[in-house]
Length: 426
Image (cartoon, rainbow, N blue to C red; front, top):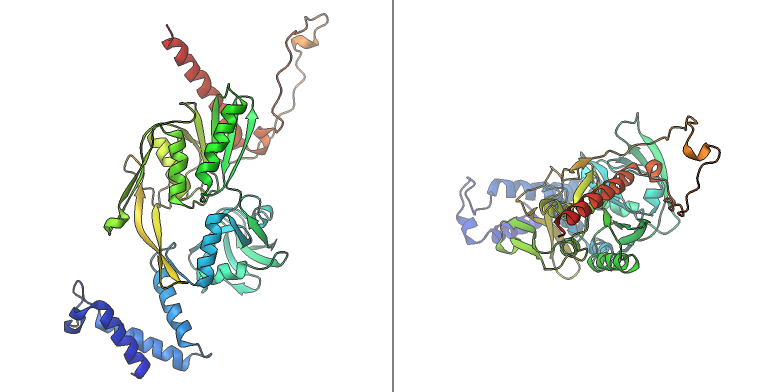
């Protein structure tokens, strides 16, 4: 071995502690595998000497660290300076690029979800899409960070994605125009008098506060509020604490989520404080296969406490917790350090949250009326002195059948809970 390879070899031995020097060729607990260390230094030395293009030793070492992390699971990663900045931008809600949450699957980029009101969503990118080419570059063989770096770029620049989509024959191309992505974590509106709708796109630093403010506005603007729909579809997750704050807003008390890992610092329990801002009003939560991580924490906690009815399709199934560990001032690693569990001790890792009521997305076409005669068609019919009720502006039954079913369910829950209250009244 040359001097660099020897240096690398002995550096690894030092990392293992003094017991490594007394290690045999067998792999015992607490001892570094010497044969594998020798192979690493040999491979490193061959790459730096014989690879077709010369690569700086620092870059090679960063590649080694990156490969080590990416081989663990889809969510562990090495964070260089750019990645550190990107992580901060995601948690604060503004970053540049396509507006798409991605992971790795089979060497390709898999779309976890397009973010609301971004170039990716407007271009028709869907959850579950596999990106196999970025412009003319094949994705297979790239690391996730390399692919993300290509997807980023100045506002107005174009990127051609070659996509494989389930249930569609052959790859197809989609052109996306990059933009500055500003994610508004929480949006809300009244669907009908008495029924509110809150959409959480992802969990950021201010999501809990914004969610509480949206519900306070509902109760302030409509004292006769009857229920709320919480839409977590295509929500890729985000900050754990933000998801706990959202659940805390709706729960009167109790366990929200707990985590378990190998280190004591990875074991934690999170509880809701007393006080349900809606005072028990019915809640329906919408989820789908793009609902991941923190979104699943919210759905799982509300489901376990019977605080909400979960409607839609099964969620993504990311039940792990990542910790950012600094390596110096401007680099670090994102390491999976724990699994999280719902209050009833469910791990949703690779399983997902199963909805109480399954409603798959569908295209709905209304049937034309057959022209039956009604009372209003009869000559001399009595007029109705009451003013007609306002209809919903958007025809949800055609635009979003899942939301339409959630609204109908919420109305039914309101009727049921109102009837129970009247039965208990003296």
